[in-house]
Every structure is written in structure tokens, then in C-alpha cells.
Amino acid sequence: MDEMNTVGTLYIVATPIGNARDMTERGRQILETADIIAAEDTRRSVVLLNKLGIRGNQLSANHKFNEYGKAKWFIEQLQQGKSIAVITDFSRFCRSRRKLQDAMQTITVSLETLPLARTPLEHDYQQLLEILHTEQNRILDENADSKRFLQDYYAMWVHQIKVPIQAMRLLLSKEEKNSPLNLELFKIEQYVEMALSCARLESDSTDYVIRSLPLEQIVKPAVRKYAPMFISKKLSLEMSSLTATVLTDEKWAQFIVEQILSNSLKYTRTGSIRIRQKDPAALVIEDTGIGIDPADIPRLGERGFTGYNGRLDKKSTGIGLYLCKEISRRLSHTLTIESEPGKGTRVTIDFATRQLQPE
Image 1 (spheres, rainbow, N blue to C red):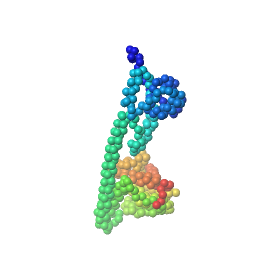
Image 2: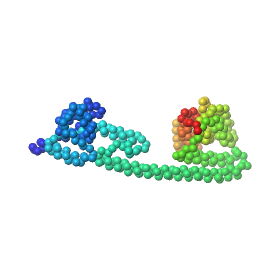
Image 3: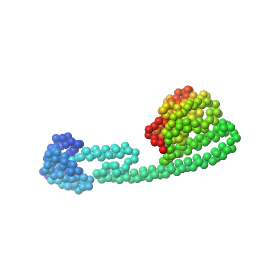
Image 4: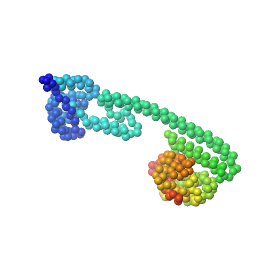
């Protein structure tokens, strides 16, 4: 019984964060009376003890590199009846936790940003993270290789399919441009061009050529391209004077206009399609088509979303409008869609931007 009474006491003392005056009175008393003060970082602890006016106590370093040897020594000291106050640096814990939280906020986490492992268990966890990180990089590399292969294959397929399409075009050269066969061949060409545009857009490289262009130079080729569709569906075209100069990529901007025209022609049975300029640098394409359900408008441009009209058509993929939205975003243009069921749809392409620089 007397031997048990000689056993010392082990105290855990939390240090204040930032201000020594936040130290509790109980914590101060323990540090003043303890025979040994153990701390992970003795340099920071000396500063704190000096501010508290505590001197003369034996200060012992206790960290991950000596914790096993120190544990045995602490037990020996306690058995001799000495009291030990172990300082826990909560501010260090907060900094480590903040580093982890910051790392979790980033998409790509570098292992170098993780806090230093302080215990064998933390070290094991970080080794596990390194293994997972290596495996993740291997999977990402494999996925990137597969993606490049598919992109190359799609590009090759698109270029190869153009050969028989051109042969068919020659065979049908004596037919009227708005004949059923020519119109179906035109649709095939548009689907092929859309597939090629999709493959290009998903590739890591870009072929943007940004320069100042007359708006008319972008719109008129698209109108000429779809002229047979206007004739076939007996729709009138109203096009106002286009005098603006816009900063954009000619090929991709023309692709956007073509897709908008294609949708207008597809969903307009009677009436007209109107193209006009909206100052300072916006193009408006509006039709008298079937319109769009208001509930669908916020989701238009999502990959694979077809909406109510697309479900009725059963052939729509929604990929055209998705490409338009994505290209517009990359070119820093704004695509706005307004519609009223039964009355028509208005699409505005705003080319005004300060983020692009001409070539």
C-alpha cells in the first residue's frame, strides 16, 4: 500500500491557441508544480512557460521519434513518485487539420501538402495514401490513353465516312438540291460533322483562332448551307442587316449558328425564322415553331438532355445544344434561350466579351 502511494501523477495539459493569457488557472498550477514537463516541441513550450513565469521545471522532449523510449522513462519516473505534465499542442493539431481540409478542397491532391506524420499510425496511413495515390495515377493514365484512342478512332472514322458521302453527293448531283434523297444525305453530313465537332471538343488540344470578324461572315454561310431545308419545308427567312464585328473563332461560331438554325428548322412546321442583330454584339435567331416547355429550359444544354420535344421526336440526342453551350462557354460567349409553347423560340448568342484576345 505504501508503495502505491509513491506513484506519481500524469497530467495532460492543453495549451492555449495564440494567447498565453487564455491558459486556465488549473493548467498553470499543474505546470508550476509538475516535476517534469513533457512537450513535443520544447522550443515553443519554453516560450509559453516564460510568458507564464514558470521556470526551473525539468523540460523533456516527447515526439514521434522517441515516444517508445520516453514511454518507458515516464513510467519509471511515475513509479518514483514524480508528477509529469504532458503539454498537448492543440494549435499544431488545428494547423494539421486545416492542411487536410485544404487538401480535400482541391481536385488534385499532392501528397507533399499533407501534414507531417507524427505517430507510427499516421505514418502507416500516409503510406496507404501513397499506394492509393500511385494506383489512382495509373488508372488516370490508362483512362487518358483510352480516351486518346477513342478520339483518334472517331476522327479517323469521320474522315473515312466522308469519302462515300462525297461519292453519293456526286451520284445525286443531277437531283434537285431539295429532293428527298439530297435532304437525307444532307442530314447524314450534319450528323458526321457533329460527331467530328464532339470529338474535337473533347480532345485535350484546341484549334481556336480568335479574331475580329463581321457577324455577317459567320451567319450567311450557315444560311446558304440550310437553304434547301427552308425550301423543302416552305419556311420563310427574314434576315435583318448584320453590321456588327465580333471577336470569336469563325469555325466554331459558325457551328453554333448552324446548330441553332437546324433546331429551328426541325421544330418549325409553318411560319418563318428570323435572324437579326441585337446591339452591341449579339445575334438573335427566333422561330415560330412548337416552342419549349418552360420546365425544360433550365436544363437545355446538359449532356444527353432532350426535354419534352426530344422525347416526342424519339430521335433527338440533345448533343447539338450541349455542344453549342460548351463551345459558347469556352469562347466566353453567352447563349440564352427563351421560349413559349405553341408560339416559338428565341435564341440569343451574345459575342460581347473582354476575356478573348484576337490572334
